[in-house]
Image (cartoon, rainbow, N blue to C red; front, side):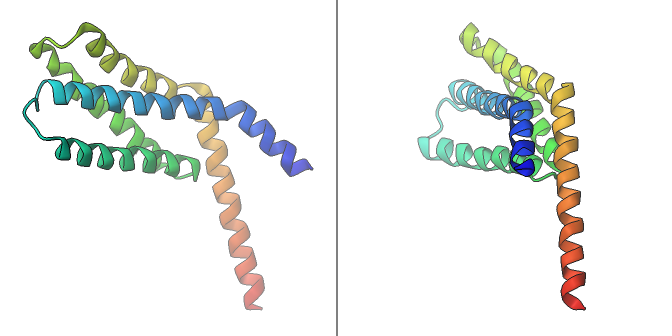
Length: 148
């Protein structure tokens, strides 16, 4: 029961923050791909669009999975995606995209970086890292006990 209430408390505190970051990264990638294909790559075929979308989706999801698993480098994958989205969208202004698309293409990566820099997200990463360290210690203890 104690473990169950601990998990509920953890999810109640940190799950909305994690979901916010995940959905902001999905929206940032979506806006970026939309603007790129409507400006830079206007004559590109749909197959390259689908392949690019699949690759970026795997990278974003992999970064978030690494964060959940307590890996410190997972955060830098997510930060890199947000920064890449921002720096790819900024030069599309020269093509005069729709103002709403351009604004959301800049807003979502900036909001995502803001959430990543929040106190609650930092606390979540520290808790996930501690949980990872605890699992590693338990695994090593079980392995040492099994060798005896």
